[in-house]
Length: 491
Image (cartoon, rainbow, N blue to C red):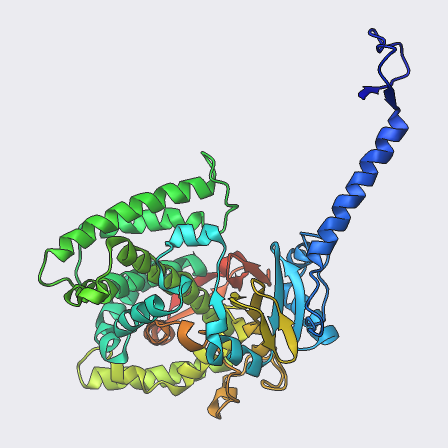
């Protein structure tokens, strides 16, 4: 059968009379188009609303539109409102569909512990493929099982209190290098804290040893960072393409550094030294790529998050003048002791800063830099009476837990005194929980204590402008990076 489109003007080539002809008018063509479109939508809907096995119940919730799910709603409103509205409607466990994935959100401490600790083997960590490419597929937090356990042991060894206590003097030198450059000028708090945190991250990654490649590593990482939150379009001129080019160069630079240290009996300290030290045990020997990916991963984890928290600390202390003065009194007492004994700040001094420590804890809760984390069900899972199909994402909502009035009365209030008493288990998880919790949490807190000691005893800061609010990039921070004018205290 020959198909001929018929239009309201003569055809230059009439059809052969012996061939049956199907005449498709514009009206019929439109009808067929919409019919097939409707069929496609039905197929998408049927696959989108996956039927669970008989007798199995998916968590309550809405999957939104086919394929796009509720992604538009997620990005066009405050994420806190998105999660809170669904929690009120459906309960602590609910389903949704964002970023092209069916998801189950969990917001109770007990459920979060199941996913992250007691049954962590059922839920593997998962990240967008573009993020894995940038950081490196061999990095610790992309894995589970034997490889993860071996790496976690090596990484943790670089961040034990017995190890990082020796870093106090170097962290202090970094802080004292930056503070004078802030005097009597307006700074972008977030950007300045990133500079401080990056230098501390370099110590944690490479140890005290200074190599000629350090400056180049810093420049390449900064280029990589600019593309981290860009659209993953690997086309010339795009931020993602530039970032991936920098990632390749960074990998080559790290490989040269690794090879140089492999041939040296003293491999240097920091994480790289620990990872290179594994060569003495054949079963644990790591390749150059494995070492490079994990070094980049540690720099990434130690850099943005710590800088974001420090930015919020300055915001909260600025907004709570009485609390700032109380913290200053605590730090002045430590400073007087240091002067009397003619010494520098020590690890033991940082262990005697209870109020400052509570301020950091409350900042971690209130700001909740890590709002949630992604896990993926490795098999069909029965979870608190519900069915979670294999491959679905599972998101423990840390921020929602931290803002629950049942655990933290008046959760919107900044109140460090709430940490004077023991908290309910699993309700405060700013660094995650279980085998994939942040191994560098103690170093991050140490960095904050050292900076706050010198900042509060010698300086004051005033927020510039009256614009309030939060921006995401990717972590929540005060708008415009919190511009402040820093002035020295007159003593």
